[in-house]
Amino acid sequence: MKSMMRFHRWVGRGLAALLLVAALTGAGLQWLLPLPDSGAVAAPSIEAQARALDRGLATLQATQPGLQWRLVQLGQPTLQVELDDAQGKRWRAELAAPDGRLLSLQGEDTLVRPWLVRLHLWKWLGPAGSWLTGLVALLALCSVAVGLRLWWRLRRTRAPQLRRRWHRRIGIVAVLPLALLFGTAAMLSWPGAVRTLIVALGGQVAAEPPVAPALPDLPPVSAGQALLSAAAVLPEARPQRLYRQAPGLLRLRLRGEEWHPYGLSQVFVAEQGGAVLAVRDGRQLPLVERYVNVIFSLHAGAVPPGGGLAFSVLMRLAWTALALALAALLLTGLPWRQRKRPV
Image (tube, rainbow, N blue to C red; front, side, top):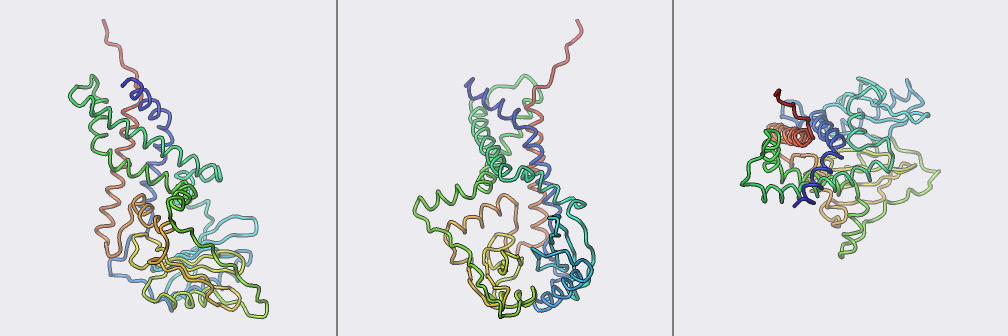
């Protein structure tokens, strides 16, 4: 009992600052994501988005020739484009989906969301940030389990201090969602370890991405042309993101009936000639790749297909309440000094 209490207390106090930052930045990121279409303003057709993308990228190339696009967010009334310059600085451009007009171009350092992502995932530490996030999540998960055991042992006793009584009340209400949050965070932070475990238990190994063939005689295709070629392979799925996967290789990510907000289906297209090199249908992926559909969606509070605007807002409110509950647990668990009563 004493060793469990000591572990629960010191893990909570030692990780309080890290968990508080993760809770508040995670809640903020929830509200910075675009809400699903309510039906009033629908995204343009894929053909219109492809034309708008080519026009917008041509405008960017003419005004900012040093920028190269790396990611395009599709399926919204505006196209969000991430670009890199020669110095490695990242930029964000917003294009009007109907006609490709350049609405804005900003450096990533001036935007709130990239800063929140860096804080939430400790990205400035490089690969060590992912391991730190996973370690913190795993220790927090163990602390939640120990806290549940302590609550069961002490459930019939009255805590002497008000903050401790609130600590117990909040903890028992939020114990299962917090365990879910910390467990999924650890799995997302250590994807290599999770995939190795799945393969060791008999799962199929994930397929390697294709290599773009060297075809200098063929002309390069535009991003819009590659988008149309890839989207035609899986017409029942909705294109979500277009990536510059590697030199000469583009990758389109599509969402069918998956829970994952960006989908699991992928189509790889050669930039020289526009030939489709590989197709990964999300319905046929092995477990080593498909597990992210549930794990990421649970952690991020993603809305299933057809969830709608109201359900999305409710999910964000619930996840924000969970973040505030975690903050309250951390604050009520700290060793606040007691005022001495006058004699």
